Image (cartoon, rainbow, N blue to C red; front, side):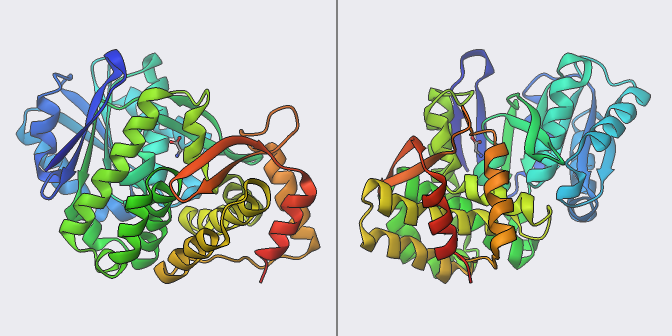
Length: 363
Ligand code: GLY
């Protein structure tokens, strides 16, 4: 097992990466000295596979868990579902020392984390991410929240978990499309922070696509290390943390304007990262060889790098970008790459340049 520490003073916590961790959930929670009552929040798909093990493990360590199952999918990431969770927590008398286990992918983690942040003004929570995307990104760093019709993640809180348990075994049952989508966030870490990781991904892509456990352990641990380093320096995204949004400005706009759920998050940010690489070439002089390597790695991974666009959809995408949280003073700010492994944040980009790049990424 690999252990990575997220260092945030009194809000510090460990990320544990390894096989066989889910059956140890109860024992791990017992070390955190939490209250007896807890709620496992999961979705219908994940619950089918893993809720029983989680509940048994918690009960075996003396906890009294209840199970809250939400419908699977991005559409559940909304305030009505949050309210329904609050009502179930209250009905079962969960109290200040009680805790929540977020058992699932990014949707469950973001939603359950937000429920934990707000219920009784905050109760502890543990992340047990079951998708690759959640293991390398959304379960770490304390971003919690839900979507509004107007945009993704527009309501939420920075609220850190007490522990993140990344069990590699749970990735075996992940549908291929979802697994590949998670690789988009993995590649992102190479582009934004670590040229050595990027080259390893190029070399070991076949093993990664086969879900080779040793390769996965190293890659997931490295991604979590990078995220922990970034979040440790800038918890609430005053500056540096913005680099984690590489490819997300266009990616979120694609998700938003095509209706949540059409593109998986990883698919949308794959297009977004290739678009950002092309913008980086125009604006920061990213070498064409680097742009080509970035595009090739996404293509070989099986991720989309283009979307179907017409004039109406392009307009919709631009409008969605202007609603993004990363907009300030009406200007869209991008994270752009200088070279593979190094990016700059807060780069102002004119609407025409965005339009041209959207044209490039249109099929
Ligand atoms: N997923 C980006 C962040 O956690 O800041």
